[in-house]
Length: 71
Image: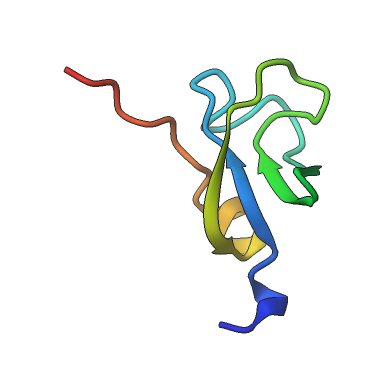
């Protein structure tokens, strides 16, 4: 995979923001790198998780999920 296809370096894994979202998905900047959330950029309580570079088309097709709760 080339650097050009590894666009997204952070994804929002907030339980309230994962899944189908509330409208248009958002690409924004977090700590100087591209970040993706299924909710709008002005949504509160983003919980950013660093990823090993993901192409945008992958995130649009398979949105991030919240981490599993510890049992």
